[in-house]
Length: 267
Image (cartoon, rainbow, N blue to C red):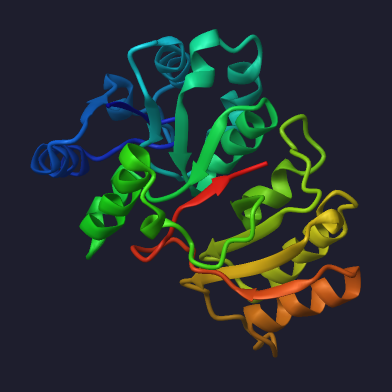
């Protein structure tokens, strides 16, 4: 199996790339091709929009590539997503596309277009303590669809998003149909008031209100709210679910951390 790594958002560190090559060599059940674009830098991004677009379309069109793995999150995939999805190459449909965080913009559009998408750990996670296990989990799913890699309480069909990314893509051409979906959300580095505001927008969507349930993953590195917001992220999400008539399904085993599990976007 050949896995292509591209960076539609931010630059992949060279150390993470080295660690990935070693991890894949130790497994012996796949090969990884890290596109040179992953190491470009153009301000915040892994190269200009044109370079990130071209790299992704190149691997989508390559019939020798079995899976496309997004190198890392950050910000930027939304800037190329609509162009990527216009007139997709035929070979794109035979691949799995895996990542999380900012990759959600691409996930939404690719899934809407009928392609095989999954939320899961990315190569840059190798720079986290314990990241080997996370990346191993992702590879287990990519290579052999190992069910042990999955979020354990999934109720298919399912989707997973960073809640800030989800809020941003609602109302755009990328927005998929959420009818009957087990929707998992998570976030990182957001104040409680911002989480509250985001949930106002997310749960106000008529499309989102058609989910079968909404579950909250981990929300990490929450900055101190001054003054104290008075309720935590679980209470915030539960409150907005109750206000909007969405079933709050409790917690989910996803997040911006090494415990992050795989969530295939299924129909």
